[in-house]
Length: 128
Image (cartoon, rainbow, N blue to C red; front, side):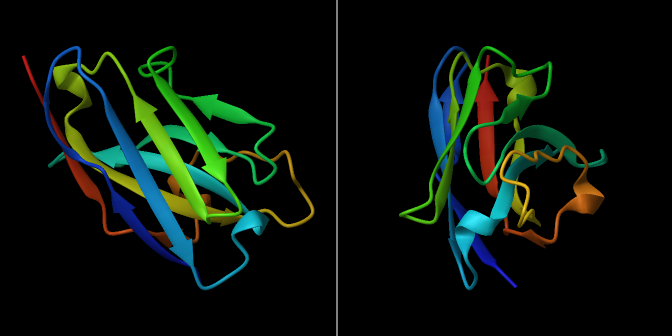
């Protein structure tokens, strides 16, 4: 199983930016599609973005498209989420997760049950 540790969360005013990082250890990072999800109290975990293990394919939720950018550095076993033009509605705990996609370098997954390992989350708070 892969161990994941998110970092980079914090408090920012609307219109600001944050860059989240997710460092992985324990298995071959490049075998995994990586995803970012977010959750607010009382609501289900929501898909934000995902990137294939090759890095060739990315997908975004409509709510963040054009504002967030996902990327990965397989040499550093790290996936990033650059968040620009943040809005109060982006306030949530952000989680990264892995989906074993060996043999499918272009596969991206958008549903939480298909992900195998999760980090502990990092809080993002955006004030108006």
